[in-house]
Length: 164
Image 1 (cartoon, rainbow, N blue to C red):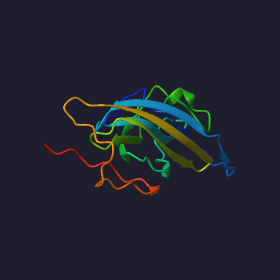
Image 2: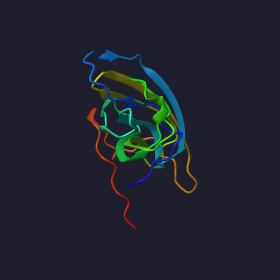
Image 3: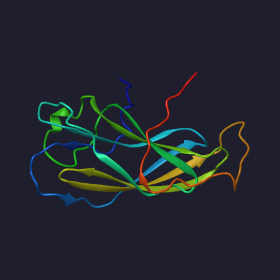
Image 4: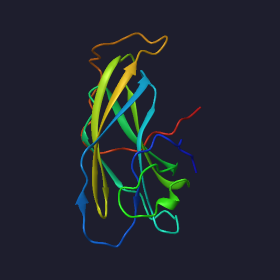
């Protein structure tokens, strides 16, 4: 199982059988990366009081980035926040979850913004992420790439596995 770095996560949840769903306020985050490099922009996980995974939340892309692409990577995550429930004692542990990953198109230099929502049995958490993309060494800046197709909102695909 691939480990996903700690400290990049925002969201986690504790599973509950309560039927009351509630929508949490929109959260705003900032990240920075180099052009055409992956950056983790959040995580999602669900666990019970025994600190065992009980599934992964649904992640929906609400506003697609204008200059990049978003994908999901499954693996072990270290939650840094509990949105629902009270099993905070599990937070220092690695739990099976999902990482939301962003990568800009090659040569882009500037700011990109996207929005996504984590959906849990007990509610939702919408997030907006502003990403500052710095030029990467050796890659020519491209202000306008006519071959780039913007990712549609909706279901977020899995990240492609790296092949050497």
